[in-house]
Length: 168
Image 1 (cartoon, one colour):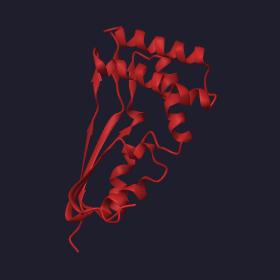
Image 2: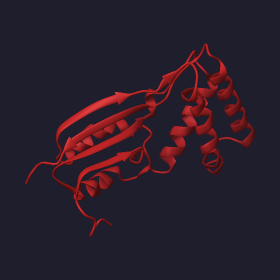
Image 3: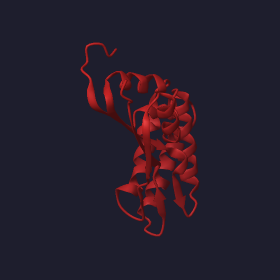
């Protein structure tokens, strides 16, 4: 419900739409709060861009489990790819796109896959996609991979899209 909320010059959403079953409806709600000429800025993930080099079986399992859990809950793990077209179809103008991908040999970037696996464990169990022991093994292998400075991890691409609501 957006009635009574003031209009804004800028509306910004980050990592939200990937979790929604109706992301277009959410964007339309954002637009109702935007003044004519205002800027809508969206950032969301494109999980298909994630990678581990050299190849990691634990990463592949994690990748599949994450995507399945998100889809089972009505989301889209690759929402970032859809953002430019959603903005275009919602009538925005001067649409711009940028892509950022955190990647590293060390540090927090490498630890995020294991942490995310831990955070989705309850959903994986609820959906009966893996056992607790299998989840623990995946987390252990992801953490070992992260600790190895000879491995490269690329997190999901972050697609950044912005555009303006036309003047009436």
